[in-house]
View 1 (tube, helix red, strand yellow):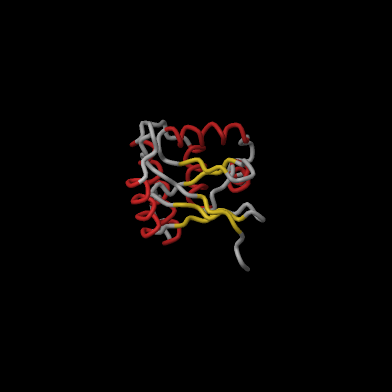
View 2 (tube, rainbow, N blue to C red):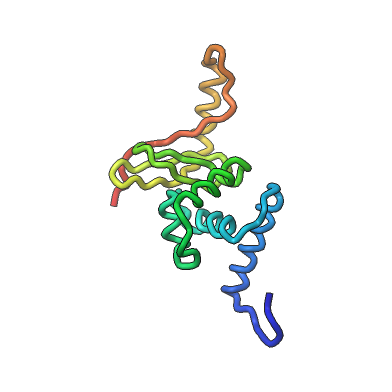
Length: 154
């Protein structure tokens, strides 16, 4: 909020809206709203690169210099448990976090460990049709996510 005589710049306004939106999302999930939860969730949203807990610590350490990696992991696990984030494991067994909750796949670079979101309705349709035809015995498919490994061409 602005005090008397203060104006809110557009940049601050969008940051304020972003924080209010995060605050509401945490409340809607029944979570206690803390500055650390807001900072960690916003870092995942802003980084957009499927960050690790260590990446998040680096991103917020200016504002939270004493935050530990353990605290970040605890908050991330809570955010996953309530459905605000998803875990993504890299081929190198590094746990990363994804704020994009819509159905999508991942392109994984074997050289750099980079992960990019990939959406393709035609691919989704092909996979769904394949499994509708070819059932897996004693298994009901609820969802599928592909991780396509390769190298990004520079």
